[in-house]
Amino acid sequence: MIKAGIIGSTGYAGGELVRILTGHKEAEIKWYGSRSYIDQNYADVYRNLFQIVDAKCMDDNMDALADQVDVIFTATPQGLCASLINEEILSKTKVIDLSADFRIKDVSVYEEWYKIEHKSPQFIEEAVYGLCEINREKIKNARLVANPGCYTTCSILTAYPLAKEGLIDMNTLIIDAKSGTSGAGRGAKVANLYCEVNENIKAYAVGSHRHTPEIEEQLGYAANETVKLSFTPHLVPMNRGILVTEYASLKKEVTKAEIREIYETYYGKEPFIRILDDGVCPETKWVEGSNYADIGFQIDPRTNRIILMGAIDNLVKGAAGQAVQNMNLLFGYKEQEGLELIPMFP
Image 1: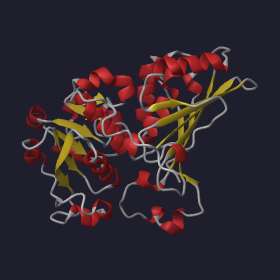
Image 2 (image 1 turned 45 degrees about the vertical axis):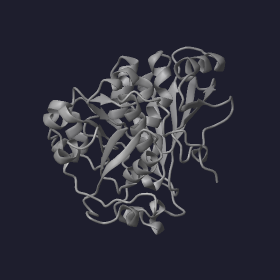
Image 3 (image 1 turned 60 degrees about the horizontal axis):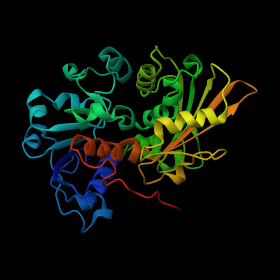
């Protein structure tokens, strides 16, 4: 039985971790960390867990936590995990960080985009980027896993096979992404108030979103070249979900059957990636509450472009579900354990 601790358990991603791990046959939560609700009953914060979770919220003392658990999840704002982690902690327990602290290998790029000083750059090189479908074998032996972001998970998985095969001109790649409001976190922000979001859709962080270098770096590894792309996120009035639409010029003439064969080669045996039938476009409602990533594509011969589409639940495959998938790999359990969640509808 895996003993798990969560720092940041009362945020949206943290709450989703609790929901998933509570149903995991091989894991038990020993520490519900939350600076905002110390000594309060966890089920008073999330009433959906009334009579299911009987525990109080604790602080974020990672040193004390490391002596009690096999794995620590840090579902916290950028900078906190990097400020708490040290060699002694990593010698005792595994750490799966849901923030961006260890995703980007170049510390100067991290500090430029996130506008904070990195407090433990000595662990950046060691950290394994936790996109299971791409880095599965590396994850199995890791001490520190950098759980990818929600936009990045969807964006990278959607384009990865074609980038890896060199079929698209990476200099032409444009990613149009849309997210539900839970992607902005649980903190009170005027921009996320009901009256601001309802009946509205808006672009934000245009040309400056912090997930951009993460997507560029990972797709650059795939394409074996430096990648600079245009990424524009949008906020839409729904609770959950990420939908990305990606546009790129093709390097050569290909058929739909050839593209499908590439996707099937890369993802055909992946338990959480579904390549949709021809003509079917991904929709967020068909992945909600699940760890699935739905992917579709369309070739536009008139412009010699391919249009790639992907959909995930930002709190599951884009955060907590992926973190549990990483945990399963770290401890040798079936990757799907605790994650065989049928999408919710309606």
